[in-house]
Image (tube, rainbow, N blue to C red; front, side, top):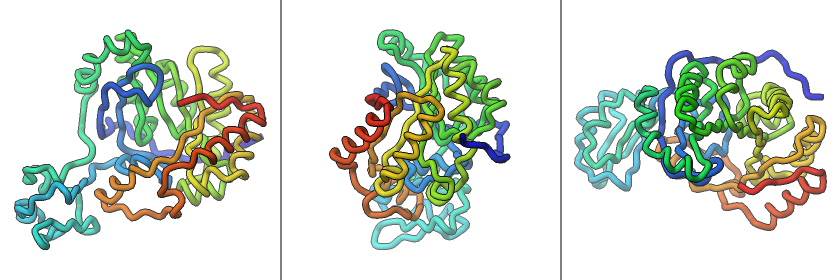
Length: 318
């Protein structure tokens, strides 16, 4: 059985930055949902579809296609990170200190800040107008990121507020958290947990995700055991990243882990490369094999689905 070595995960007691609150989502849980994107994650997955969510602090997002070349931002940048070339601003992210002075000066909003300070009241004001849709479709609120469990006190208060309004709650998590605190502060107020099951091999997980996966594997075991009591539902999900997570070796190791733990249903998610433009706008260099930059092949998806099914793991539709 998989064992856990001691691991320290830094917990943030302050409120997180919120990247976005998306209404009327049909892709992040049952029914119509509002999705809260929290900024900050302990992992550094090379294929992360929300690269703007990795860092806890605010960042600059620059979309050159929206730049009109007025140059107003240059006068506000003390770090000389901005230059005007051929009618367009060139942004040197290496020089940028994210002081945000250029953001307010950019009238066309080619330069914007990623992450906003929103109180629980601010968040609820954006969510409550959608409650009739939640009630009519069996939907609710999904909290994702980033990794919301980095901010357990704040997320706990938010979840309590949502439950006071009888709103269904779902957390999407990478599984890298202190389980004792999670069980006390977060789990009692969740109806559903989606947890990622990316890579079983420890060294591969460190290589592609930046940290060991021992705590994640241990937490999945604990979540599965707690879910048997029926107070919440659990779904493990594997993102299929070509030549990284979708190898037969990794899929077989995941199946073995599920069999040992007793997990009988799971989800697999097709790779979607549309996020890569966001990385460019953040000044993030991509370290991805060419295959991982493409849309996922249907025949490969069917093959992996069969591997799970042959091992007695039912793959649910997402």
